[in-house]
Image (cartoon, rainbow, N blue to C red; front, side, top):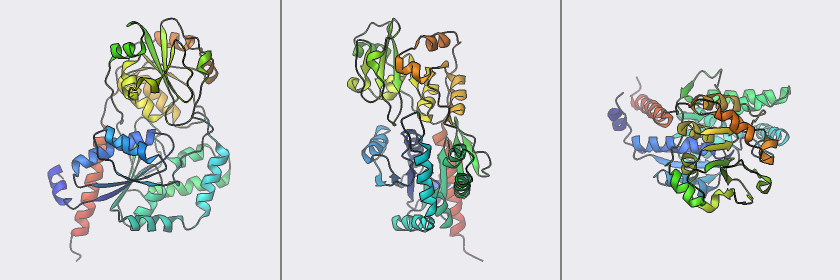
Length: 383
């Protein structure tokens, strides 16, 4: 159906509930561009966001992309996984929280009551399974999007426990009720979901100003800059111990950074993260969707800190290695500030071609088409 016809049939305002997991910032980064693309196609679209993330952070992310700030409702049900820090999963607490959720036989009824009370017309989740199941049971369009899903992540952490696998199977059943599950590249494959659709990457592009960054840091124009960033989960380093290689400075975006002549706390610069990424020479980070997708779009040299217990990590690393020069740095080496081996490994590699794509537009087109088709069928007189 042509876009103009879809908009004509959807002139009536739609109230979309957007559920965003509070596990880091990457899920928010994936979601906001999609909502922007939907708003462009559906100017009367009404958005309510439900999340455990800080409401001010959510509203700021929408405003940063030139979008109106949505209403934000608090929610603790989609927590993702409990973490000891930005790298290490807390299996015990995570499994206990999921067990508690599924021990409550009324969860589906409560989710349905919540959707009815909000008066929503459709649900979009990144990547909670409960609102998807509730929406589908009410006959509402339901869409999931992410580079991972919690059912597959939990199954990978079950360690042979039948009770955990049973919870993961229940989660998969809930996901399977969605009209579409958009599996973002790079990310886990979502094997076994009949309604899975692969979607192109979603990532921001920053403004590169290499000279301006070096001026802000007060370093020579030839100085090389590494950006150390670990997303929205806690991580601290004793940066006072770091002895950076000659000709390098570090801009560090983690908690409690101790500044030295070659280590600068990112918050003091007042630069947007995405512009720092575009203007530096090297990224040091854990594998995470938003961080790695943005690094791939910038073709930024990257030292990745291995996350052997995070099932999404291999897919992210393999994809980024196609679009940027990559090597690994063990967490103990990073803590000690030993960067030389990783930098040498990167220097031996040829340049890569930056990633491209517009997953937000792809997904928005499909969502609009499905909702329009559903409304068209509902509007037809019964025979």
